[in-house]
Length: 273
Length: 273
Image (cartoon, rainbow over all chains, first blue to last red; front, side):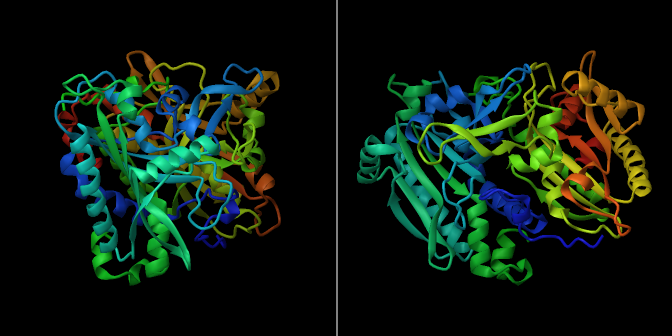
Protein backbone atom coordinates (compact mmCIF):
# COMPACT_ATOMS: atom_id res chain seq x y z
CA UNK A 1 0.00 0.00 0.00
CA UNK A 2 1.24 3.50 -0.64
CA UNK A 3 0.81 4.65 2.94
CA UNK A 4 4.11 5.54 4.53
CA UNK A 5 4.48 4.65 8.19
CA UNK A 6 4.21 7.79 10.25
CA UNK A 7 7.01 8.10 12.78
CA UNK A 8 4.88 10.16 15.10
CA UNK A 9 1.16 9.89 15.47
CA UNK A 10 -0.06 13.45 15.34
CA UNK A 11 -2.62 12.46 12.77
CA UNK A 12 -4.23 10.23 15.40
CA UNK A 13 -5.40 13.24 17.07
CA UNK A 14 -5.17 14.43 20.66
CA UNK A 15 -2.43 16.56 22.26
CA UNK A 16 -0.20 14.59 24.63
CA UNK A 17 -1.64 11.24 23.48
CA UNK A 18 0.63 9.37 21.06
CA UNK A 19 0.95 6.01 19.35
CA UNK A 20 4.33 4.32 19.74
CA UNK A 21 5.59 2.69 16.53
CA UNK A 22 7.74 -0.45 16.71
CA UNK A 23 11.08 1.33 17.11
CA UNK A 24 9.73 3.20 20.15
CA UNK A 25 8.32 -0.02 21.58
CA UNK A 26 11.81 -1.57 21.30
CA UNK A 27 13.35 1.22 23.38
CA UNK A 28 10.53 1.08 25.96
CA UNK A 29 10.99 -2.72 26.17
CA UNK A 30 14.70 -2.16 26.68
CA UNK A 31 14.14 0.39 29.44
CA UNK A 32 11.70 -2.00 31.17
CA UNK A 33 14.17 -4.89 30.97
CA UNK A 34 16.99 -2.65 32.21
CA UNK A 35 14.98 -1.52 35.23
CA UNK A 36 13.95 -5.11 35.99
CA UNK A 37 17.63 -6.10 35.94
CA UNK A 38 18.54 -3.14 38.15
CA UNK A 39 15.86 -3.59 40.81
CA UNK A 40 14.56 -7.12 40.30
CA UNK A 41 16.64 -8.77 43.00
CA UNK A 42 15.18 -6.59 45.74
CA UNK A 43 11.63 -6.83 44.37
CA UNK A 44 9.19 -9.38 45.78
CA UNK A 45 6.86 -9.12 42.78
CA UNK A 46 6.42 -7.05 39.63
CA UNK A 47 2.93 -6.13 38.50
CA UNK A 48 1.41 -4.82 35.31
CA UNK A 49 -1.40 -2.51 36.41
CA UNK A 50 -4.39 -1.34 34.37
CA UNK A 51 -4.86 2.27 33.18
CA UNK A 52 -8.00 2.55 35.32
CA UNK A 53 -8.29 2.28 39.08
CA UNK A 54 -11.04 2.26 41.69
CA UNK A 55 -11.91 5.88 42.46
CA UNK A 56 -12.09 4.78 46.12
CA UNK A 57 -8.39 3.79 45.99
CA UNK A 58 -7.42 7.17 44.53
CA UNK A 59 -9.47 8.91 47.22
CA UNK A 60 -7.65 6.93 49.94
CA UNK A 61 -4.35 7.90 48.34
CA UNK A 62 -5.45 11.53 48.51
CA UNK A 63 -4.84 12.21 44.84
CA UNK A 64 -8.10 13.97 43.84
CA UNK A 65 -7.76 16.33 46.80
CA UNK A 66 -4.13 17.21 46.00
CA UNK A 67 -4.26 17.26 42.20
CA UNK A 68 -7.85 17.92 41.08
CA UNK A 69 -6.63 19.59 37.89
CA UNK A 70 -4.70 16.44 36.81
CA UNK A 71 -7.39 13.91 37.72
CA UNK A 72 -9.32 12.04 35.05
CA UNK A 73 -12.44 10.08 35.94
CA UNK A 74 -14.44 7.60 33.87
CA UNK A 75 -17.98 8.45 32.81
CA UNK A 76 -20.23 5.74 31.48
CA UNK A 77 -23.67 4.22 31.38
CA UNK A 78 -23.35 0.44 31.58
CA UNK A 79 -27.07 0.06 32.19
CA UNK A 80 -28.03 2.05 29.10
CA UNK A 81 -29.31 5.18 30.83
CA UNK A 82 -27.83 8.67 30.89
CA UNK A 83 -24.02 8.82 31.21
CA UNK A 84 -22.76 9.47 34.73
CA UNK A 85 -19.75 8.89 36.97
CA UNK A 86 -18.56 5.29 37.31
CA UNK A 87 -16.58 3.75 40.19
CA UNK A 88 -13.37 4.22 38.18
CA UNK A 89 -10.80 6.91 37.60
CA UNK A 90 -7.78 6.88 35.31
CA UNK A 91 -4.59 5.64 36.92
CA UNK A 92 -2.65 8.71 38.10
CA UNK A 93 0.47 6.97 39.39
CA UNK A 94 1.36 3.31 38.98
CA UNK A 95 2.11 2.91 42.70
CA UNK A 96 -1.49 3.66 43.71
CA UNK A 97 -2.32 0.11 42.62
CA UNK A 98 0.09 -1.36 45.20
CA UNK A 99 -1.04 0.15 48.50
CA UNK A 100 -4.27 -1.88 48.69
CA UNK A 101 -2.13 -5.03 48.36
CA UNK A 102 -0.49 -4.37 51.74
CA UNK A 103 -3.63 -2.97 53.42
CA UNK A 104 -3.98 -4.45 56.89
CA UNK A 105 -0.50 -6.02 56.84
CA UNK A 106 2.28 -5.74 59.40
CA UNK A 107 5.55 -4.93 57.64
CA UNK A 108 8.25 -6.89 59.50
CA UNK A 109 11.15 -6.65 57.07
CA UNK A 110 11.87 -4.54 54.08
CA UNK A 111 10.97 -5.48 50.58
CA UNK A 112 10.02 -3.72 47.39
CA UNK A 113 7.17 -4.25 44.97
CA UNK A 114 7.35 -2.88 41.46
CA UNK A 115 4.67 -1.98 38.97
CA UNK A 116 4.17 -0.52 35.53
CA UNK A 117 1.05 1.27 34.36
CA UNK A 118 0.00 3.70 31.70
CA UNK A 119 -0.92 6.81 33.66
CA UNK A 120 -3.17 9.74 32.84
CA UNK A 121 -2.60 13.36 33.80
CA UNK A 122 -4.96 16.06 32.61
CA UNK A 123 -2.16 18.42 31.58
CA UNK A 124 -3.36 21.82 30.34
CA UNK A 125 -0.37 22.28 28.02
CA UNK A 126 1.25 19.97 25.49
CA UNK A 127 4.87 21.01 24.98
CA UNK A 128 7.36 18.18 24.31
CA UNK A 129 7.22 15.62 27.13
CA UNK A 130 3.99 17.02 28.59
CA UNK A 131 2.07 13.81 27.90
CA UNK A 132 -1.44 13.13 29.11
CA UNK A 133 -0.96 9.37 28.65
CA UNK A 134 2.42 7.85 29.52
CA UNK A 135 4.06 4.72 30.91
CA UNK A 136 5.35 4.82 34.48
CA UNK A 137 7.61 2.14 35.99
CA UNK A 138 7.75 2.33 39.77
CA UNK A 139 9.47 0.58 42.63
CA UNK A 140 7.86 1.02 46.04
CA UNK A 141 9.60 0.29 49.34
CA UNK A 142 7.74 -0.46 52.54
CA UNK A 143 9.29 -0.42 56.02
CA UNK A 144 10.44 1.62 58.99
CA UNK A 145 11.13 5.38 58.61
CA UNK A 146 14.94 5.33 58.63
CA UNK A 147 15.21 2.34 56.35
CA UNK A 148 12.73 3.72 53.85
CA UNK A 149 14.40 7.13 53.78
CA UNK A 150 17.79 5.46 53.36
CA UNK A 151 16.44 3.35 50.51
CA UNK A 152 15.06 6.44 48.79
CA UNK A 153 18.48 8.15 48.97
CA UNK A 154 20.27 5.05 47.75
CA UNK A 155 18.08 4.23 44.77
CA UNK A 156 18.05 7.85 43.68
CA UNK A 157 21.81 7.58 43.15
CA UNK A 158 21.39 4.23 41.37
CA UNK A 159 18.66 5.67 39.13
CA UNK A 160 20.72 8.73 38.28
CA UNK A 161 23.76 6.56 37.50
CA UNK A 162 21.71 4.31 35.22
CA UNK A 163 20.24 7.27 33.34
CA UNK A 164 23.70 8.80 32.94
CA UNK A 165 24.85 5.42 31.65
CA UNK A 166 22.28 5.89 28.89
CA UNK A 167 24.15 9.02 27.88
CA UNK A 168 21.76 11.52 29.44
CA UNK A 169 23.11 14.64 31.17
CA UNK A 170 21.07 14.63 34.35
CA UNK A 171 20.60 16.80 37.39
CA UNK A 172 19.15 15.66 40.72
CA UNK A 173 17.07 18.33 42.41
CA UNK A 174 14.84 18.66 45.47
CA UNK A 175 11.37 19.21 44.10
CA UNK A 176 7.74 19.57 44.97
CA UNK A 177 4.53 18.41 43.34
CA UNK A 178 2.34 20.94 41.52
CA UNK A 179 -0.31 20.97 44.26
CA UNK A 180 -3.42 22.93 43.40
CA UNK A 181 -4.52 26.10 45.19
CA UNK A 182 -3.13 28.00 48.17
CA UNK A 183 -3.22 25.16 50.75
CA UNK A 184 -1.48 23.03 48.12
CA UNK A 185 1.28 25.59 47.74
CA UNK A 186 1.91 25.34 51.48
CA UNK A 187 2.09 21.53 51.21
CA UNK A 188 4.52 21.94 48.31
CA UNK A 189 6.70 24.26 50.38
CA UNK A 190 6.83 21.71 53.20
CA UNK A 191 7.59 18.93 50.72
CA UNK A 192 10.52 20.89 49.36
CA UNK A 193 11.75 22.00 52.79
CA UNK A 194 11.72 18.44 54.13
CA UNK A 195 13.29 17.13 50.91
CA UNK A 196 10.58 14.48 50.54
CA UNK A 197 10.65 14.58 46.74
CA UNK A 198 13.67 14.43 44.47
CA UNK A 199 13.65 14.56 40.73
CA UNK A 200 16.14 13.51 38.08
CA UNK A 201 15.86 16.02 35.29
CA UNK A 202 17.31 16.17 31.80
CA UNK A 203 16.85 17.98 28.49
CA UNK A 204 14.00 16.71 26.28
CA UNK A 205 14.34 19.39 23.63
CA UNK A 206 16.70 22.34 23.19
CA UNK A 207 16.41 24.35 26.41
CA UNK A 208 13.49 22.28 27.71
CA UNK A 209 14.37 20.43 30.92
CA UNK A 210 11.91 18.04 32.52
CA UNK A 211 11.79 15.38 35.21
CA UNK A 212 12.34 11.84 33.89
CA UNK A 213 12.43 10.08 37.27
CA UNK A 214 11.48 10.96 40.81
CA UNK A 215 11.95 9.52 44.27
CA UNK A 216 9.38 10.29 46.95
CA UNK A 217 9.36 9.52 50.65
CA UNK A 218 5.67 9.44 51.61
CA UNK A 219 6.46 9.05 55.32
CA UNK A 220 3.44 7.39 57.03
CA UNK A 221 0.86 8.85 54.59
CA UNK A 222 -0.07 5.60 52.85
CA UNK A 223 0.46 3.50 55.99
CA UNK A 224 -2.14 5.62 57.70
CA UNK A 225 -4.70 5.77 54.88
CA UNK A 226 -4.37 2.14 53.70
CA UNK A 227 -3.68 0.73 57.15
CA UNK A 228 -0.32 -1.01 57.09
CA UNK A 229 1.79 -0.96 60.21
CA UNK A 230 5.18 -1.75 61.69
CA UNK A 231 5.66 -4.43 64.40
CA UNK A 232 5.53 -1.71 67.13
CA UNK A 233 2.02 -0.78 65.96
CA UNK A 234 3.01 2.52 64.32
CA UNK A 235 2.08 3.20 60.72
CA UNK A 236 4.38 1.79 58.05
CA UNK A 237 6.42 4.16 55.91
CA UNK A 238 6.77 4.00 52.18
CA UNK A 239 8.83 5.56 49.42
CA UNK A 240 8.73 5.18 45.67
CA UNK A 241 11.07 5.59 42.75
CA UNK A 242 9.24 6.35 39.51
CA UNK A 243 10.54 6.38 35.94
CA UNK A 244 8.65 8.11 33.11
CA UNK A 245 9.45 5.67 30.30
CA UNK A 246 8.06 7.79 27.47
CA UNK A 247 9.94 10.89 28.65
CA UNK A 248 13.17 8.91 28.91
CA UNK A 249 12.56 7.78 25.32
CA UNK A 250 12.10 11.40 24.20
CA UNK A 251 15.27 12.41 26.05
CA UNK A 252 17.24 9.55 24.47
CA UNK A 253 16.08 10.58 21.01
CA UNK A 254 16.95 14.19 21.69
CA UNK A 255 20.41 13.08 22.87
CA UNK A 256 21.26 10.33 20.38
CA UNK A 257 19.06 11.07 17.37
CA UNK A 258 16.18 9.33 15.66
CA UNK A 259 18.17 6.46 14.18
CA UNK A 260 18.50 3.72 16.82
CA UNK A 261 21.27 2.06 14.80
CA UNK A 262 23.51 5.08 15.35
CA UNK A 263 23.05 5.23 19.13
CA UNK A 264 26.26 4.61 21.11
CA UNK A 265 27.08 0.88 21.37
CA UNK A 266 27.07 1.02 25.19
CA UNK A 267 23.54 2.44 25.19
CA UNK A 268 22.36 -0.09 22.62
CA UNK A 269 23.83 -2.85 24.78
CA UNK A 270 22.02 -1.69 27.95
CA UNK A 271 18.74 -1.47 26.03
CA UNK A 272 19.35 -4.71 24.11
CA UNK A 273 18.73 -2.88 20.79
CA UNK B 1 8.05 -8.38 55.04
CA UNK B 2 5.28 -10.72 56.06
CA UNK B 3 2.99 -9.79 53.22
CA UNK B 4 2.33 -12.70 50.92
CA UNK B 5 2.06 -11.88 47.23
CA UNK B 6 -1.56 -12.03 46.18
CA UNK B 7 -2.08 -14.07 43.04
CA UNK B 8 -5.14 -12.11 42.10
CA UNK B 9 -5.80 -8.52 42.90
CA UNK B 10 -9.31 -8.48 44.26
CA UNK B 11 -8.11 -6.52 47.22
CA UNK B 12 -7.19 -3.73 44.81
CA UNK B 13 -10.75 -3.17 44.29
CA UNK B 14 -12.95 -2.82 41.23
CA UNK B 15 -14.86 -5.58 39.41
CA UNK B 16 -13.31 -6.50 36.06
CA UNK B 17 -10.16 -4.46 36.76
CA UNK B 18 -7.18 -6.58 37.80
CA UNK B 19 -3.46 -6.30 38.44
CA UNK B 20 -1.30 -8.85 36.61
CA UNK B 21 1.49 -10.30 38.77
CA UNK B 22 4.78 -11.35 37.19
CA UNK B 23 3.71 -14.85 36.19
CA UNK B 24 0.74 -13.42 34.27
CA UNK B 25 2.98 -10.83 32.62
CA UNK B 26 5.24 -13.67 31.40
CA UNK B 27 2.32 -15.39 29.68
CA UNK B 28 1.05 -12.12 28.16
CA UNK B 29 4.58 -11.39 26.91
CA UNK B 30 4.69 -14.88 25.41
CA UNK B 31 1.35 -14.41 23.67
CA UNK B 32 2.49 -11.06 22.27
CA UNK B 33 5.74 -12.52 20.97
CA UNK B 34 3.87 -15.50 19.49
CA UNK B 35 1.45 -13.22 17.62
CA UNK B 36 4.31 -11.05 16.39
CA UNK B 37 6.02 -14.16 15.02
CA UNK B 38 2.77 -15.34 13.42
CA UNK B 39 1.77 -12.08 11.71
CA UNK B 40 4.94 -9.97 11.76
CA UNK B 41 6.04 -10.75 8.21
CA UNK B 42 2.84 -9.36 6.69
CA UNK B 43 2.75 -6.37 9.02
CA UNK B 44 4.11 -3.00 7.87
CA UNK B 45 4.36 -1.66 11.42
CA UNK B 46 3.34 -2.62 14.96
CA UNK B 47 2.10 0.07 17.32
CA UNK B 48 1.60 0.31 21.04
CA UNK B 49 -1.48 2.50 21.48
CA UNK B 50 -2.55 4.43 24.59
CA UNK B 51 -5.61 3.51 26.69
CA UNK B 52 -7.21 6.84 25.81
CA UNK B 53 -8.21 8.10 22.37
CA UNK B 54 -9.60 11.29 20.85
CA UNK B 55 -13.37 11.21 21.30
CA UNK B 56 -13.57 12.58 17.74
CA UNK B 57 -11.83 9.43 16.44
CA UNK B 58 -14.28 7.17 18.27
CA UNK B 59 -17.16 9.21 16.88
CA UNK B 60 -15.81 8.77 13.35
CA UNK B 61 -15.51 5.03 14.01
CA UNK B 62 -19.16 5.03 15.07
CA UNK B 63 -18.49 3.38 18.42
CA UNK B 64 -20.51 5.63 20.79
CA UNK B 65 -23.54 5.35 18.53
CA UNK B 66 -23.34 1.54 18.33
CA UNK B 67 -22.21 0.72 21.87
CA UNK B 68 -23.23 3.58 24.19
CA UNK B 69 -23.50 1.17 27.12
CA UNK B 70 -19.83 0.06 26.74
CA UNK B 71 -18.36 3.52 26.15
CA UNK B 72 -16.17 5.20 28.76
CA UNK B 73 -15.31 8.88 28.45
CA UNK B 74 -12.80 10.95 30.38
CA UNK B 75 -13.97 13.72 32.69
CA UNK B 76 -11.51 16.26 33.96
CA UNK B 77 -10.81 19.87 34.78
CA UNK B 78 -7.31 20.74 33.59
CA UNK B 79 -7.96 24.42 34.12
CA UNK B 80 -9.03 23.99 37.73
CA UNK B 81 -12.74 24.66 37.30
CA UNK B 82 -15.67 22.29 37.64
CA UNK B 83 -15.09 18.80 36.16
CA UNK B 84 -16.55 18.30 32.70
CA UNK B 85 -16.09 16.25 29.53
CA UNK B 86 -12.62 16.28 27.97
CA UNK B 87 -11.69 15.60 24.33
CA UNK B 88 -10.80 12.02 25.27
CA UNK B 89 -12.56 8.70 25.65
CA UNK B 90 -11.15 5.39 26.79
CA UNK B 91 -9.85 3.18 24.00
CA UNK B 92 -12.65 0.76 23.05
CA UNK B 93 -10.79 -1.30 20.46
CA UNK B 94 -7.10 -1.16 19.66
CA UNK B 95 -7.74 -0.83 15.93
CA UNK B 96 -9.51 2.53 16.31
CA UNK B 97 -6.05 4.08 16.72
CA UNK B 98 -5.02 2.90 13.25
CA UNK B 99 -7.68 4.31 10.94
CA UNK B 100 -6.57 7.94 11.30
CA UNK B 101 -3.09 6.80 10.16
CA UNK B 102 -4.42 5.93 6.71
CA UNK B 103 -6.92 8.79 6.48
CA UNK B 104 -6.72 10.39 3.07
CA UNK B 105 -4.52 7.64 1.63
CA UNK B 106 -4.98 5.62 -1.53
CA UNK B 107 -4.47 1.94 -0.76
CA UNK B 108 -2.69 0.47 -3.79
CA UNK B 109 -1.57 -2.87 -2.44
CA UNK B 110 -2.43 -4.90 0.56
CA UNK B 111 -0.64 -4.62 3.83
CA UNK B 112 -1.44 -5.04 7.49
CA UNK B 113 -0.78 -2.85 10.49
CA UNK B 114 -0.89 -4.27 14.01
CA UNK B 115 -1.50 -2.66 17.35
CA UNK B 116 -1.85 -3.46 21.02
CA UNK B 117 -3.81 -1.38 23.51
CA UNK B 118 -5.44 -1.77 26.87
CA UNK B 119 -9.13 -1.35 26.13
CA UNK B 120 -12.07 -0.35 28.29
CA UNK B 121 -15.60 -1.71 28.09
CA UNK B 122 -18.22 -0.60 30.61
CA UNK B 123 -19.48 -4.14 31.21
CA UNK B 124 -22.49 -4.32 33.54
CA UNK B 125 -21.55 -7.79 34.84
CA UNK B 126 -18.26 -9.22 36.10
CA UNK B 127 -18.29 -13.00 35.67
CA UNK B 128 -14.92 -14.63 34.82
CA UNK B 129 -13.50 -13.07 31.65
CA UNK B 130 -15.93 -10.13 31.70
CA UNK B 131 -13.16 -7.57 32.12
CA UNK B 132 -13.63 -3.84 31.96
CA UNK B 133 -9.92 -3.29 31.33
CA UNK B 134 -8.07 -5.75 29.09
CA UNK B 135 -5.27 -6.00 26.55
CA UNK B 136 -6.21 -6.37 22.89
CA UNK B 137 -3.73 -7.30 20.14
CA UNK B 138 -5.06 -6.59 16.68
CA UNK B 139 -4.00 -6.97 13.08
CA UNK B 140 -5.82 -4.77 10.57
CA UNK B 141 -5.85 -5.37 6.83
CA UNK B 142 -6.56 -2.64 4.29
CA UNK B 143 -7.37 -3.27 0.64
CA UNK B 144 -9.96 -4.19 -1.97
CA UNK B 145 -13.18 -6.00 -0.93
CA UNK B 146 -12.34 -9.52 -2.16
CA UNK B 147 -8.79 -9.45 -0.90
CA UNK B 148 -9.80 -8.17 2.52
CA UNK B 149 -12.57 -10.73 2.88
CA UNK B 150 -10.18 -13.48 1.80
CA UNK B 151 -7.61 -12.30 4.33
CA UNK B 152 -10.21 -12.34 7.09
CA UNK B 153 -11.12 -15.96 6.26
CA UNK B 154 -7.48 -17.02 6.06
CA UNK B 155 -6.24 -15.46 9.29
CA UNK B 156 -9.26 -16.76 11.16
CA UNK B 157 -8.04 -20.30 10.38
CA UNK B 158 -4.46 -19.36 11.33
CA UNK B 159 -5.66 -17.81 14.61
CA UNK B 160 -7.79 -20.81 15.48
CA UNK B 161 -4.90 -23.18 14.73
CA UNK B 162 -2.54 -21.17 16.91
CA UNK B 163 -4.98 -21.12 19.81
CA UNK B 164 -5.53 -24.88 19.45
CA UNK B 165 -1.77 -25.29 19.47
CA UNK B 166 -1.86 -23.70 22.92
CA UNK B 167 -4.04 -26.59 24.03
CA UNK B 168 -7.36 -24.74 23.93
CA UNK B 169 -10.50 -26.48 22.66
CA UNK B 170 -11.94 -23.81 20.41
CA UNK B 171 -15.00 -23.30 18.28
CA UNK B 172 -15.32 -20.79 15.41
CA UNK B 173 -18.77 -19.25 15.16
CA UNK B 174 -20.51 -16.55 13.14
CA UNK B 175 -21.30 -13.84 15.66
CA UNK B 176 -22.70 -10.37 16.09
CA UNK B 177 -21.81 -7.47 18.33
CA UNK B 178 -24.06 -6.64 21.29
CA UNK B 179 -25.49 -3.53 19.64
CA UNK B 180 -27.69 -1.45 21.88
CA UNK B 181 -31.44 -0.90 21.34
CA UNK B 182 -33.85 -2.03 18.62
CA UNK B 183 -32.04 -0.51 15.60
CA UNK B 184 -28.89 -2.12 16.98
CA UNK B 185 -30.54 -5.52 17.02
CA UNK B 186 -31.33 -5.11 13.35
CA UNK B 187 -27.69 -4.24 12.63
CA UNK B 188 -26.64 -7.30 14.62
CA UNK B 189 -28.97 -9.50 12.59
CA UNK B 190 -27.48 -8.18 9.33
CA UNK B 191 -23.95 -8.65 10.73
CA UNK B 192 -24.72 -12.29 11.48
CA UNK B 193 -26.59 -12.93 8.22
CA UNK B 194 -23.70 -11.49 6.17
CA UNK B 195 -21.14 -13.34 8.29
CA UNK B 196 -19.14 -10.14 8.85
CA UNK B 197 -18.00 -11.15 12.33
CA UNK B 198 -16.52 -14.46 13.41
CA UNK B 199 -15.46 -15.39 16.90
CA UNK B 200 -13.11 -18.02 18.26
CA UNK B 201 -14.63 -19.20 21.54
CA UNK B 202 -13.34 -21.43 24.31
CA UNK B 203 -14.09 -22.34 27.92
CA UNK B 204 -12.81 -19.85 30.53
CA UNK B 205 -14.37 -21.61 33.51
CA UNK B 206 -16.47 -24.76 33.87
CA UNK B 207 -19.41 -24.31 31.52
CA UNK B 208 -18.50 -20.68 30.72
CA UNK B 209 -17.63 -20.18 27.06
CA UNK B 210 -16.45 -16.79 25.80
CA UNK B 211 -14.86 -15.25 22.75
CA UNK B 212 -11.04 -15.05 22.91
CA UNK B 213 -10.48 -13.79 19.36
CA UNK B 214 -12.61 -12.31 16.62
CA UNK B 215 -12.28 -11.48 12.95
CA UNK B 216 -14.37 -8.68 11.50
CA UNK B 217 -14.82 -7.53 7.94
CA UNK B 218 -15.83 -3.87 8.20
CA UNK B 219 -16.49 -3.59 4.45
CA UNK B 220 -16.13 0.10 3.45
CA UNK B 221 -17.27 1.47 6.85
CA UNK B 222 -13.90 2.86 7.96
CA UNK B 223 -12.85 3.74 4.42
CA UNK B 224 -15.89 5.94 4.17
CA UNK B 225 -15.68 7.57 7.60
CA UNK B 226 -11.89 8.06 7.70
CA UNK B 227 -11.54 8.65 3.98
CA UNK B 228 -9.18 6.06 2.54
CA UNK B 229 -9.77 4.85 -0.98
CA UNK B 230 -8.79 2.32 -3.60
CA UNK B 231 -7.07 3.31 -6.88
CA UNK B 232 -10.47 3.28 -8.67
CA UNK B 233 -11.71 5.96 -6.26
CA UNK B 234 -14.04 3.70 -4.29
CA UNK B 235 -13.71 3.49 -0.53
CA UNK B 236 -11.10 1.12 0.87
CA UNK B 237 -12.18 -1.97 2.74
CA UNK B 238 -10.75 -3.15 6.03
CA UNK B 239 -10.90 -6.18 8.27
CA UNK B 240 -9.39 -6.88 11.66
CA UNK B 241 -8.33 -9.88 13.67
CA UNK B 242 -8.41 -9.22 17.42
CA UNK B 243 -7.02 -11.28 20.30
CA UNK B 244 -8.12 -10.73 23.90
CA UNK B 245 -4.81 -11.42 25.64
CA UNK B 246 -6.19 -11.44 29.18
CA UNK B 247 -9.02 -13.81 28.26
CA UNK B 248 -6.59 -16.16 26.51
CA UNK B 249 -4.53 -16.13 29.73
CA UNK B 250 -7.63 -17.04 31.77
CA UNK B 251 -8.49 -19.82 29.31
CA UNK B 252 -4.93 -21.18 29.46
CA UNK B 253 -5.02 -21.25 33.25
CA UNK B 254 -8.40 -22.94 33.21
CA UNK B 255 -7.02 -25.55 30.77
CA UNK B 256 -3.51 -26.11 32.12
CA UNK B 257 -3.71 -25.07 35.77
CA UNK B 258 -2.14 -22.28 37.81
CA UNK B 259 1.40 -23.65 37.85
CA UNK B 260 3.17 -22.49 34.68
CA UNK B 261 5.92 -25.06 35.25
CA UNK B 262 3.43 -27.88 34.76
CA UNK B 263 1.99 -26.57 31.48
CA UNK B 264 2.61 -28.88 28.48
CA UNK B 265 6.15 -28.49 27.09
CA UNK B 266 4.82 -27.59 23.62
CA UNK B 267 2.77 -24.73 25.08
CA UNK B 268 5.68 -23.53 27.20
CA UNK B 269 7.84 -23.56 24.09
CA UNK B 270 5.40 -21.45 22.04
CA UNK B 271 5.10 -18.95 24.90
CA UNK B 272 8.83 -19.03 25.69
CA UNK B 273 8.07 -19.79 29.38
